[in-house]
Image 1: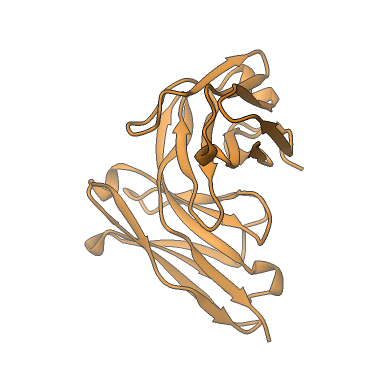
Image 2 (image 1 turned 90 degrees about the horizontal axis):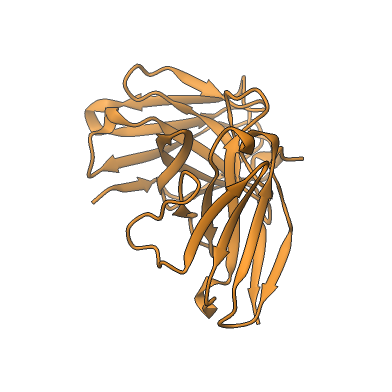
Length: 108
Length: 120
């Protein structure tokens, strides 16, 4: 099992706000980053270093962190946001990367 | 623009070897480490490790030592993943990803993925 814990599945109504969380001890010291992956496609970075958006990522995506939990929030969720979302940070040794197990987001 | 272009799908028999390439362009190759990430069918992302593109020094995640080799050819800005003694459980999509750092490591550009299928 991963050292970063994500809910396996989350659903949201079209146009509403959804928060996807990632829990792990390393998040008390290190920032999480977030990736969106649609079926048959490579992951895409949507948030890096806790709350930074790469160019080209819509501003409805935002990141935050508190204690051992990092969050990805999508405000005004669109149909095209339906995807798997993964967080990443470090493992307990602090020397290696680890991914969360992923959250499947369904837009209703 | 930054691009990572990987080699095509492979079908291999158990016990064989495979070498996957990742051609980088649009940036200075030796300025960023290159990571490899595995995704088994229907599963999540699994970090395999990375290679320092300046020194060639690799680091492997637990579970990816022994049969896995990371290498480079800086003259053609290409990173390679080689897997030997293939097993059915190596069947997966393998991604290369450029490494960045800001308090923590993250991956800003990804290759399109290479499907490796191991079957007799």
